[in-house]
Image (cartoon, rainbow, N blue to C red; front, side, top):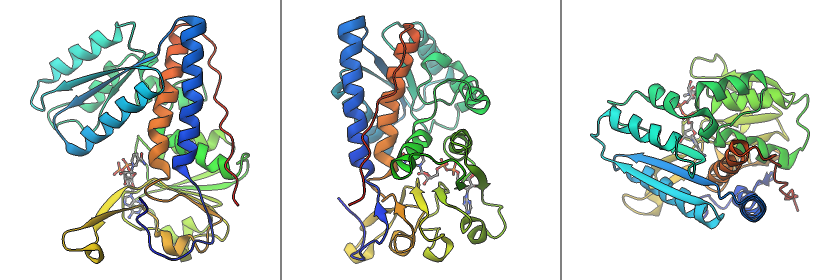
Length: 313
Ligand code: NAD
């Protein structure tokens, strides 16, 4: 369901949902080949601790799409008050379970859990979220490894508009370990000139105006305004923010990104919507990573699925 107003965008609206569906379709074919030719069925284990409703929805979607792609899905639910040692024991068991090629611990974790310790407990070969320091290091040094899904999804969407990003001025808003920093590394690998802006950046609009490619991942509703954006720029909006929508009725809410869609879509060359942009790519890239992990564990060459470009009309 679209949650935007009636203003017609000038920019091409990048259909993340359609691109993710095509990627998932290609992954399904790769899984079928792995099963029939190599006798390997990739498996993804997802650990959910506690009963956060948003996390429960994410975990359900991941399980559904994993099974739809022909893979095995293993769900593990731990009580929100379970000791850290219980979570670490479970990870240790999954590390040595040959049917689990990918292990994902749904974030956020309860306050009494040391997130870094948990990430470091996952076997880097099964770290399909790409948060283990070994995979972070591989990304930074340009070695092959597992790359976080959301940043990877951002790059696939940007390259759907411009397959060669070489020489682009790229600006990333946000320096988190899960989005901002890894997406900046991926942009460097694509030969972009990269600036990372954050909450202490001076003159954010001035920095953003330099961008041929903007990745907004600040978690601030509609932070980026139309007059901040270079005409023709590619704008990838990672933000997912739930805000009040009194125009829809009392107590109603809606999702918005970190980009003011109506004004920016009048200036940009291409833009991702929220919802329906980066969000669907995150799970598709997780599926991709699970296949990559299964191939690597079994010594099978991983072939990157080709996703046909969706051209602007
Ligand atoms: P975070 O809170 O960990 O990091 C936010 C970053 O933005 C920080 O580095 C901070 O310095 C910067 N920032 C905050 N306010 C700013 C401002 N006013 N100006 C400039 N920089 C500012 O958040 P995160 O985990 O990186 O997530 C960012 C957003 O992306 C959130 O809205 C989150 O919900 C969304 N997200 C979406 C997906 C997806 O699948 N689409 C996945 C992960 C995160």
